Length: 342
Image (cartoon, rainbow, N blue to C red; front, side):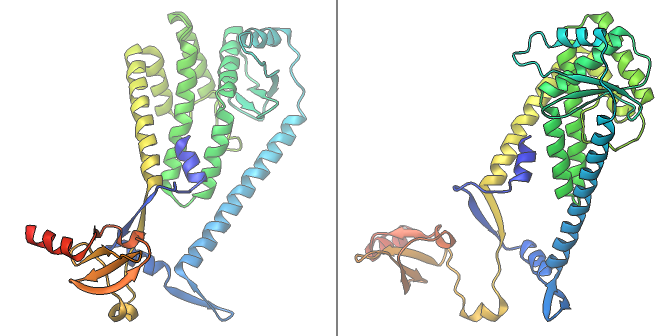
């Protein structure tokens, strides 16, 4: 979630530190600003072309998601709600410990192949048209209700939005896949706490049954489901459910991963890497202030005198980030004393 928020809101903290990078990064940035086209008297650089392609790609993917959502919602709204006393009783029992029951509606439809929870404010649980026993129906409803109260619908939508924005980055698709898997495992772990060994087997059989009925339809991939995306994910969920040691290790790994993610987010927001280079045309008129050749001496009238190679260069009113690493002395005598010590 932190990674998602960081990608959605790419801002830096006020205390962020800027680090000048003199190798590779400046060359790459120069390539981005290399003009390659001239359109109506205006030069377009590699960066301009990249931004245009990026924007078009994001717009098309976002439009596709909105259209799919609109079509899916329209089709679902045409389906009648199930008015089964059995389902009402199951949902009422599952929500008995909730402070604010969400008033779930249930629809059975052939539009889907796996159970889905749909709707942020007025949740609807969609069930495929397959034969389900009372216990299987209970497991499915509890699974989807847990997804809803875990706010997994919102997390999946944010994940989808991040994928749309950063569609050109292959790592985003791996992140999205991992998020989907973690959400399912989290629900599994929550449900099996109150199940005995026999019920765990029934739950696994239900998972397997839904997985066999599943298809590769991606029209509702932005919604939490009951099934698994592939055999590997299903196998992993089976192992976690059956093996308490794996569940315990999974919790430890999750905690370590969360700590790592928080650290990465804080570091990425606190440290900004910027390319540093001097334009060749300005090279002869540019002086670089380094800690090895320069220092600052407090001026009695205010500000600081800048010295380069022990020669006075200029007076500044404040110390800026570009030369904040320079030594600051009270007077020239202190400079001489320090040189003697060295």
